Length: 474
Ligand code: SF4
Image 1 (cartoon, rainbow, N blue to C red):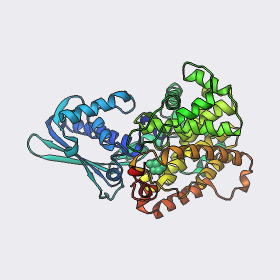
Image 2: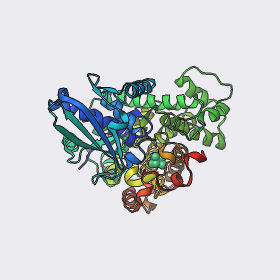
Image 3: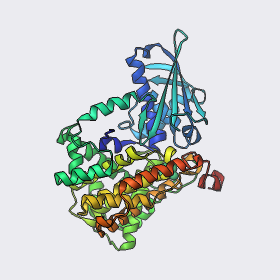
Image 4: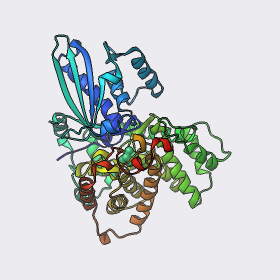
């Protein structure tokens, strides 16, 4: 049984895409680690990278080439300063050299050493191969697959197997929603309490709290920064950053000096239905504008859908419960992470496998369930809310214009967040015994729909809006 920590579902990373940016970045880091482990690193003379399938089709817009170079340089996507990414890339490009893992200078011309190959490897649509040429003229090639949400595997899943063994100590192994519910009923615990018990088998409570706090801080920073940054997003679509203008109208003359004061300031604003809609949309837009400009966000469960969970959690804190605190934030993140892992185990969180239902649909389900727990819903109602949110995202295709994570992606986060809130309210008003569709069934349906979906709607930019609207129209 596959067991996934919620810290694998909610990860701090860099935009614009978890599968096309964070994944390739991590793959490059992992390859360098492997070279070192096997004693090959010092012999490397040259390096080539091949990006296959969806990574080739939308990799330019998703900054896959930049991510690979950053990984080869040995930088960490969680901590590397965002404003130093472009200067690092400019240096590689202008000098045609790369400092492998900050240690070994090799000659590297991005246009020659990184190849975009539109063929699809059999194992997964997001394939990457790294080839090293050694001093003695021999070569070594390894393939990696970015399977969504920043997860990277090798075909033989050596590492995945190891991970499963590591997790064999989970006290509550969970594959399906029905099992999760059984544990809640048997132990008389909420979903977040069950998930916390599992996490405690991996790390201490203090470590868990610290990790959750840093996740929330990145979420808050991305909302704050997005709401206070104006201008046009990079990439050529001329997309104007909208969170800035919306936020300015909503916040009015209220003053504050940092993000936590900002929360208090928002709590003091007018909150009729229209303002609530605008605030929630504004939070989601802000995060995804930061993501689109290669900023730091929390992959939740992907970067393209990074705005939904922070927007719904912020809704809870500034609209629903002005006394909301870290305990609530922790519960929300634990529950949402577990719901995301159910989708990863039973279907996919990769748009290259399942279209946008796997990104925005899953994030909306995660947020809907987590909000329901905070609003006092039972575990049954939490799962019902997640089911409702996904049910109305089934079949959603992925068709980003020009391969950029901007249109329809940014706005779609706002829609996913609003649907999550509505799904929560609907679940809170229902008796779970009346539910016709259990969460496991909707997960299975999503997976069947993913398999039936035409390839052109799976992060290739070869269908839908991506072909109806071109860069020149923008
Ligand atoms: S359309 Fe959806 S799945 Fe595709 S890149 Fe945008 S947010 Fe991600």
